[in-house]
Amino acid sequence: MTTGNPHNALLLGIDFGTSRTAVMSNRKFKELIHSVVGYPRDIIGVKILNRTQVIGAEALDKRSLLELHFPLENGVLREGSEKELEAAHELLRHTIELAEPRAGEKICGVIGVPARASVANKEQLLKLTEGLMDIAMVVSEPFMVAYGLSKLTNAFIVDIGAGTTDICAMKGTVPSVENQATILKGGDYVDELLVAAIRDAYPTAQLDRHVARRIKEHSSFVGEPGDPIIQILRLNGRPTEVDLTDAVRATCETIVPDIVEHLKRLLLVFDADHQAEALSNIILAGGGSRIRGLGAMIGHHLREYGDVRVTMVADPDFSGAQGALKLAMELPPEYWNQIGDVIGTVG
Ligand SMILES: Nc1ncnc2c1ncn2[C@@H]1O[C@H](COP(=O)(O)OP(=O)(O)OP(=O)(O)O)[C@@H](O)[C@H]1O
Ligand SMILES: [Mg+2]
View 1 (cartoon, helix red, strand yellow):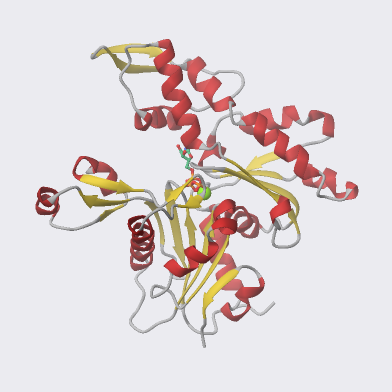
View 2: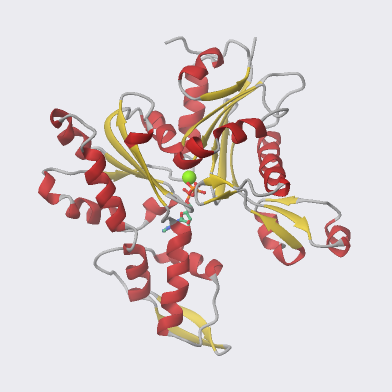
């Protein structure tokens, strides 16, 4: 394969996620941005902020002044209104600007999106890059993770994101729809269940899903508990110590059965000769891969299938963007249309 960057372009690897967008460039730029755009609710907001839009973490912080738009939902681009598409476009523009393109240089980007969006919305996603990139390719994110790890054959990628969990059986080619599965249970789903479980145990507790998410990210686990998870919550307004061990465990474990069932089903897409190797290459990615004990529990449920090895990527925040950048750097843009869906040309 020819490698290099024949056009001296700015090459970008972007992982466009439901909750966060990661970007890396061939000039070693690396950033993680919350996938949210906020527009001031009224003229007072415009006056206080002195801007007509706010992107990323700042938008979440100032959400009382803003109407928030999260461009992806349940693993697909929201296409309901012009505003949603504008928010997605602005988010991409911001992401690219952060990477500091130089005047006049070509911008070539590989964009990893949830597997479902790469099927449902790819044309719309490519259109969003018009005017922002000279050439853009949209590919499914689990494939990007596999590419980054050079695990392109006889492996499973299980990408546990905020909106969805994507499972992909890698068979040495760009995965077809039959070799992928999308489960609409990711971190957001766990957060919602955790809010309900805590309210169930402590009916007077005041919390929303942002608080639940913080608790989860701090203490998520499945299987045997370690130290009890003690948090201070306001019960009827009064700060009180509560034990959330059972609630965290039960809600985190809700994602396991679907993952196991889809792994069993997708195992059959490999020839019998390759199944043992695939089972020794189950790789967890995405923020949810940080749930303690998850790999061991998945392995346990698959114990009748022989030796199973479940590992997690070293850097769940950037493994998709890193794979996208690697592809952008290894494959000259004129060949991109052999891998994914492409818009634009270079040269
Ligand atoms: N330690 C942790 N334990 C459990 N979940 C975590 C942890 N850290 C992050 N997460 C969850 O991971 C999710 C974010 O993961 P990621 O950044 O991979 O998602 P995304 O790419 O934005 O979403 P998607 O792939 O669905 O579009 C959030 O739901 C977050 O709460
Ligand atoms: Mg993701």
